[in-house]
Figure 1 (cartoon, one colour):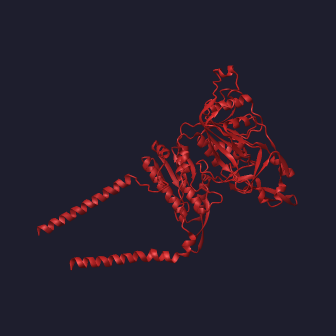
Figure 2: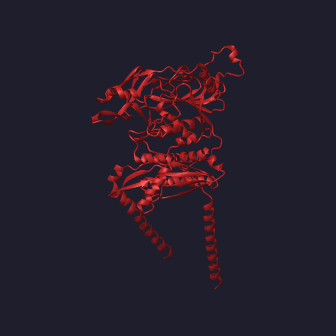
Length: 563
């Protein structure tokens, strides 16, 4: 009887040890987060910039995600991907990233739900009124695919769903999953940044007024200190400025001011050029049904040429365009309007893989011009935005008339595909004043002339209105940048400008995270519908058959062994 008792004790000891090991493994697993990324595109690997940023957190960042509850499959994937990313960020940050998921539609009372929806909208989150099929039923659901990110005493909204004109829902959701790391990391950066770089809107040459750029100024101020500076021939006007924005000047640059801008760039300063090469009076068009686009003399063509870019004296017409209202007649005193696509307002959907514009929605141009590059040694040139494949170009002077809408466009005339309209220049630029200054100015210690720049960047765009917000006439307040009050669409102008400045001034490399690509491996719906019965049979009966065969084999093995 001793031997069985010893075996029993050994069994109990083994059981107790197994339980202890399981408890320890669960405890360790709850404290440690680890996963092995075996995907070809490294979709589950955080970038170095993101890791460094969250590791440096000195307080908790709390994320409230309003994407929970009964969701369609695509949004469940977005929700799960968001949770996985937050788990990984929490592990890297020593639990300085915390989160909760909330279902804004959880309350059965419709009035309570509507109050929650209104509150979330006031906080800056956009809702999606989703229609989807569940079996044979067509269902409708309001979803807030966004989050509120809080740090210390600051809180900002974060939109998780990224829309894109012309993309199907699966592609949009996949793009949203791709951008999760960048969007969340960018929100954290916005909240935690201590020393903000300084951006200056240049004044003095008829640039856009403060109210015209009020919306983008507010958005930029989340990341940067934003000012308006009139150079006024002062050599130190741009001291301590990291980047300048030249937004739609309409008059000549003074040669001294131009020199100061040149030397600012030579010292490593960044510049965003938003230039209207032709002047178009759109108000005149509305009154008289036609106007003329004539060239502007700004005294910067030679400067841009020296840096490696040229904005041409033309207008780009694109069949892929945003609409304007046209009066067709009157009933009494009331004008009868209809929206027509206005080919002078191209909707530019980025085709470049550059992280600055990748997966960006359409950007609206207004009377934009084409941009060329000039061969300059040591300068890397990257075209960021192109027109569609149905493009026509008109050289200055151009008659702009509403009569163009009377007839269907002649497709053979729109035969200039993918005309470049924005370019990124990177490298060491040569001063436009090289070999042009007298010796006494070259030796002046106050001027400290540089004929070649440090490694720096600039972006040249053939349209000034791309950064201009419309104004609510009744209140004098700005519409959001990119909002088209006629079609009620929101274009990506704001995101594009923010990306431009982030790219020019980002030393952390966070903008490169936007280039992360996750391949979308969708099921072939046609093949799935055709072979549905066969796949159902394979998935239901093959596992059962394998279990039966295994049981029979096991039976015969045991019978042979113990016979």
